[in-house]
Image (cartoon, rainbow, N blue to C red; front, side, top):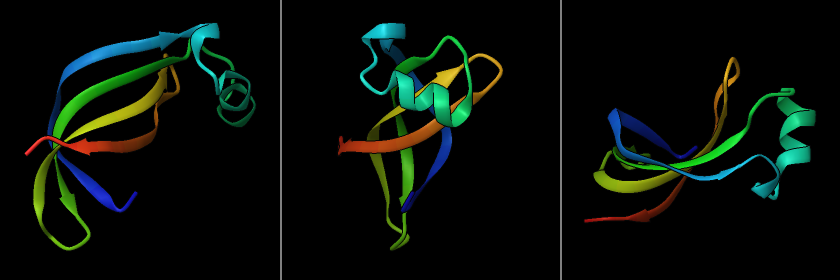
Amino acid sequence: MNFEVIGEITDVETIAVGKAIRELKRLQKQYGQGRWRKMKGIARVRLASGRIRKAELHWYEAHGIGKREVKRKRYLD
């Protein structure tokens, strides 16, 4: 990541669950079995330059494994 999440992630939504996730086999192989979900939410992020912006984030998570591969999709400000 070339950014740091500042504070809470809000407006969290589930995008896909289980077989609807294109990367499911890779996630299971890399991080382990679990009920994988692709999620999205909004948070303030600090960029490598030090600038703070509001952004939409996407990530994968599973119970007992946690959040993995947080990606910044677009800026909202």
